[in-house]
Image (tube, rainbow, N blue to C red; front, top):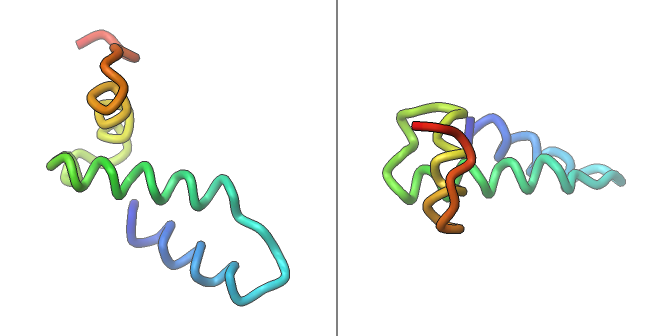
Length: 60
């Protein structure tokens, strides 16, 4: 998911629009990838946020 959100955010930079949510989503996927969770798709973003914030969001 990092690649499509990156394309979208770069595209919106060329237009007179904002993409705060897309940028936040992209950064979340980048963090997950940096933590070694990139192959786990969307669920990895929750696990990354748990790791970064020292909390449990979903039961394991």
